[in-house]
Each structure stands twice: as C-alpha cells, then as structure tokens.
Length: 105
Image (tube, rainbow, N blue to C red; front, side):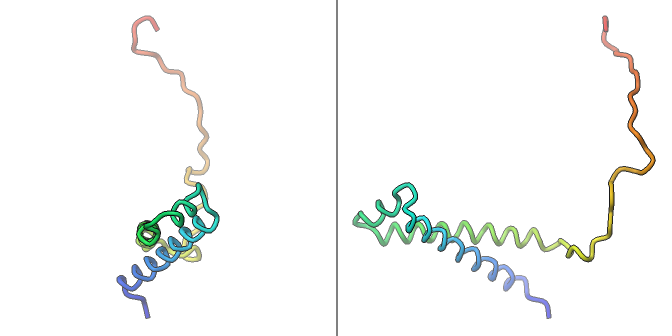
C-alpha cells in the first residue's frame, strides 16, 4: 500500500525538524561563536532557546519537505534504462574555416 501524500510530507517535515533540534543542541553544546554562553548567561534563556529551536526546526523541515517533493518523480536506479553517451556515435567534431562579416577582418 502506498503512503498518502500528506503523510509523506509530514514524515519528512518531522525528520527535518528533528535534525534542526539536533543542530541547535550541537551549536549550544559546542558553544559555536559563544552562542551557548550568551544564551544561558542572559535573563531570557527560554525565549532565546525557543526561537532557535523553532526557526532551525522550521528551516530544516522546509528543506527536507522540498527535497522530498522534488524526489517524487525520480525513478529508482534499477528502473532506469542504460543511456550511455548523449552524443551520437560515429560523429567527430571538426574545425571549419569561416569568414568574418566585419570590415577589415
């Protein structure tokens, strides 16, 4: 049975949001650019943490949903025909002498 489209999008959005939360956790644990120190040293820790998690989650969810939609029309690699080269076989490029239409050339 094939998965419905809204469920497919929701599953990808949830995965992206989870990745966003993990990225925020990594940024805070590693204290990249002093963000963790700045965030936990201030008075509005909860608001700053909520904003970071919300916007990172939203960004990563949007990216994963977009990539999932773009991948919908793609066939599995096993179903693709062997195309080989796009250039017709037996043809070789050759230089051809041309005359310029400009005066003096």
